[in-house]
Length: 292
Image (tube, rainbow, N blue to C red; front, side, top):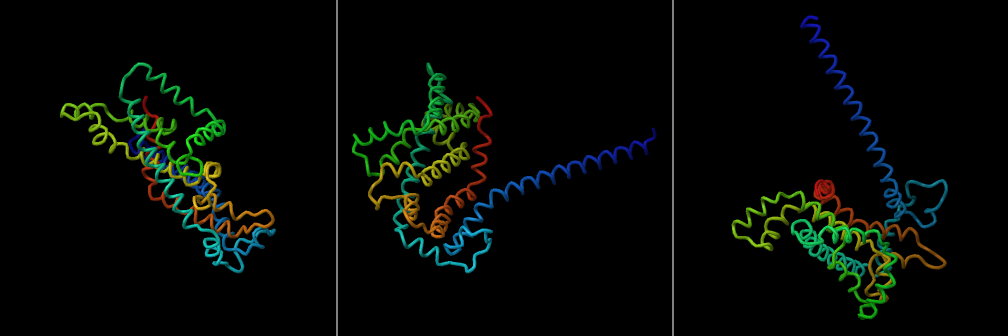
């Protein structure tokens, strides 16, 4: 076989390989686009319904464009309930939960990842085992505990538990801690840094993606929580946005267009936070579980 024939065969093989790669990439993009459209359809329907008159919400066949466009739905929805107060309550609860989860879980996770003590693995397995306990099982004993403490109708049952750690967040941060080389901490220790100095100055800056993921999860959980405020809050001035949305649904009549408009406004902060911090969020999830 001559050099020219070998060169032609090599070029043909390279062309086939490039063509196969392009086809696979095209199929991947088509699948991702189709999946994205499936996820975006409910959001699009929510926004469109928020601009419809109430009598057009459930018509069949459905109308994909409102006629007329009722922009006044947003003003009516946000003024029919004290949504400013509800938003401040939800924001306060969510931010306190973020701080509590970041502080408590980072300390616990660092202890499990770096400190060697008897029963460490057993305690960590017991901690993970608590993730299998349904939260509904704990509702009654938690309510009795908070009632005896006099915390009913306050924000304390919605915020204080975040300062006592979460098994999922501890696992997430612990796995990220395990990916950090121990040599960095040993070098800081040789320079005279203590455990707290190493923790705050060396380790925490390196796990920023994981901390961002925990912060987003915490904020989302507190912002979207409906059951816990429903159980512990009875004063309307302390209601959260989720309880405010529930006020739209009456016994005999429900203004679904106003619920849709209010839901769009309530959902926007979470969408903005996710897209702004998407890079760190994805890193915090994908880089855990690689070691340990």
